[in-house]
Image (cartoon, rainbow, N blue to C red; front, side, top):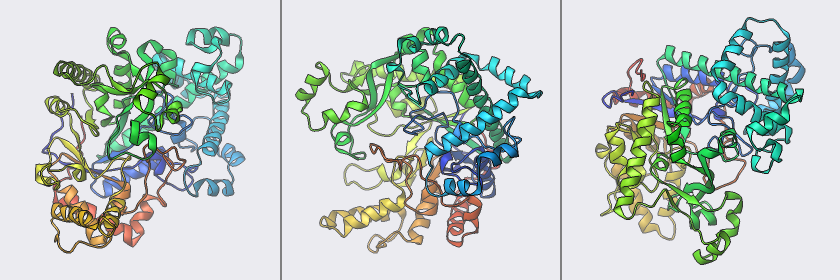
Length: 570
């Protein structure tokens, strides 16, 4: 297991890959954008680049609802000759005009258009690659052999999705395609399916090569890459289709209602229903947790660290007896009315709630066992646990025992007696400290909301809250700024960097002090997972206002001793 040295404090940024830009990027961030980001980090003494999951997404474009737990998203492939075997300038010019590229690069990610164009270019590159006599074919064959355990089923699943016009809901497919064995029997003699299977294997080969190049560049520059492993996997994924025995499809995982996420009536009343199937842990145990071991090893091959999204799920997961497509049926219902729709079932924790105490002990034992298994699968990779939400009392002591950093968000950490913010000195060393994840509002939006509260009908309580924040930041409590000022912005960066916690991460929106948000939980909006930076990182460096923000961060990193060259997990 890679040991986190809490005395070797580091700093970094969270930047979704899709949000990054480079000129000629097809309207979405790609692996070359990530290499540019690594160079930016190295120039400004930032040690860790945190990104969201990079697995292939489904129709909702959410990185937390991927089509595969291992397959990489072809949307992030850089379509540049020399990086894609078979791709030529002539092929690019045939499909991509200057006006089309300009259209793609304007505004948020245009997923449908980008996906169609990139897959068409990869199809043409694949055809040229297949008809050629390149030595790289040996490398491709080696990749097929090395990745056979997951790649064969994924590529078949992906070809069937195309056969059904993009429908990933395999539970509604005809019986002939309901399992890998049946699908292979049906596909015999169908050359189109065989060709598609080989094509999607080729796409994964290209993607893995490019991300391997990203890792090598990060190693060279001394920048650590932090990936992300979601606890759950989409029920309409290649994994569940090919190994349904490992999952319980009768239940749908999510999170209970909480005060911070009440984005719509359903979420406020019932909680978040993510739609993920529940793991059949006894079935996983029989395989020595092969699914998770393989998943973790693949991530560790690219990243120096990885964040486990919703680590609470390993202990127990809040589950709904209905899939998200039915959420609307339960809005406004009483529990008794809901039971009539579900045959007597209500949302609950699985395997069991934490009460009575013996249940909590069982949940703790399960979580510790699973986390030890994950650590053993990636002995050279640093593991970080997203432990936010309604956290059982036993989770954080367990993480400390296993030497796994959890998350600390200062604006959520309160002294119960007077609701004051806990001091930065009280923050744990073994932790990732941040003002917010991709799910939270940026600090500018947070402070502007406080100002509206302060000057609204309930102004006294808002005033007290603003005073609490000023005290935490070490600013005069009787003269807080009326808006989000540069001085306040700078101070918030300095205080975060001055935390005793091992790793301090700023959301890219918080670095530049804007209100750009990458996801709003519970909102089924096209704005989620599609917002991009309005320029390249190099262009931000040249802009006086954003360059000032970058300088603030770099100065705070140096002053707080968060910079140590080549400080990577080994």
